[in-house]
Image (cartoon, rainbow, N blue to C red):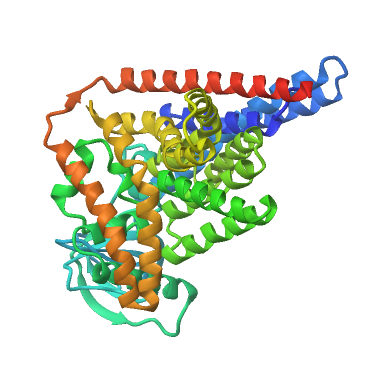
Length: 508
């Protein structure tokens, strides 16, 4: 039986989910082959001839079929909910609880609600459990745990012939939309819950950023630090999209992985690696609680946290194993994650930091020592912390970015190389300014000025490059294939370099 069995089984499970999402299957088909495969595994376990290899193959098949079953079961639940809606008519009265406070955009406010019950034709309340995204004018704002009585149209997100994983709202367990309903009654939350306090703290932090940093950089930092990107001006968001740098203006796996890397490197210089690892994980966990544990943030934080022990002990293989197993466990709870852009960026950035950073640092060290530059170790540390880590994450996430955009900016690699070293400074200075501003606005404004200078410089670079015609319509499949091939070549080179270093250490 080969090494890293759990990693292989995890990859087989993920492959089963991917297959079920691409091919129309039905749930009952899976249980028979799953039972047969399990029985086969038991028989092979009792067989003495080539028992381990045959058992491993049987386990791979079982894991693959389990992935098929997991996707099919979740898809069956979602489609059953849409096809068997218990209420009829163009309008329905519901009672719901606010599970995500209102997010104010420029033109409207959106609120996520958990439907509790609906009013039937006999004017009796009937239980109904589902989530909906509600849109109202910006004058409406509801806190977490508020109970609402609403009347309006509940529009299913899914259509009858649509794959569930293709709908972003369904991936986040939201089955309905509700546009501008009539608010019949509002009951404010009683007492203070932990989630309510966290959402309130996030709202206050956003207000602090708006008070200590000028517009539009305050909204840029709100996107990077708090995941609130609804108020970023359209012209600025479009400039980031055109230049292929839109992935940095919202909390994603890319930014979380960079934050985890910065924190772990900093603590590693101060504490022993075990203490540094625990401290780094606590910082990421507290930050996640601070900004609010939405599903996308939780996924990004979890993927970022697993890089910390692997980096601090210098064992990338352990990190890769943990990365694969963690991804499979997350998909066990939500099989649609495989198609979630945030998850893909999280996985890609984490993979890049684990696989490429050491290799690029080795190349940079050889170059710096060859040219006999002054203070080589200090220069190498600076380049590694503020350039090579971001470059590693960028290369690994390149296939994801190409896949989700039909256009490609020919200057995107250059723009990313220019602005990515600025991102750690923006995150650190902006975060310190925000935390200080929560305690003292005058001190927060002092740090906010420094954060604004870096963020404004970053924006001006983006706006400058956005003026240059640079967008090409591409064959996304060819470019995705080319970017994956590039990653494979770099990965092979990194593995060869690691193997060479290991053999050299063995000689001593």
